[in-house]
Image (tube, rainbow, N blue to C red; front, side, top):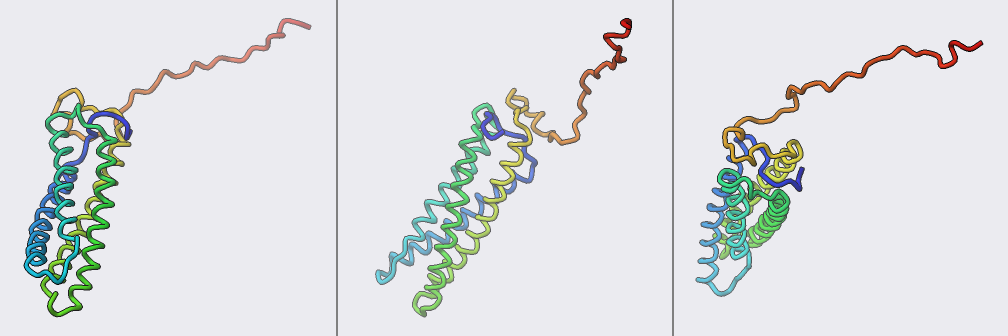
Length: 191
């Protein structure tokens, strides 16, 4: 379940989604840094969006990088409730980040002298929306796989067991069958 300790067994593609999120956040960090440079060079406009995006990229590195490293290196220290809370916060933060970027992009594009600012904010909004979708998918898959296997098999420090996914069609030994008895009347010998 979600309150168990130890990493659930994930398919390989979830590792790729986490790495994709981290790469997207690096691209957004570069764009946000450029917007911050533009804002500091011109004093007549300011938004807090680049600073928030820089915070969000560092938060994303921690939220998706640390569990990924713990999952492979020290699965006994993987606390599912902490990861669930962090993934949920990440989804909320990415939603606010790309929505705020989209607002400032629409405002910046409408003014001629802010065209560069608006176009870069638009790129950040688009990439942020993609990161938001990936973070929601990551949260959903995490919950699904955490609920599928409530007993972490790889908590015994066996990395080879992590490769095999547990399916719903595992062979299970049948329980002992119940013996059937013929019914006999208690009063059969009485008149």
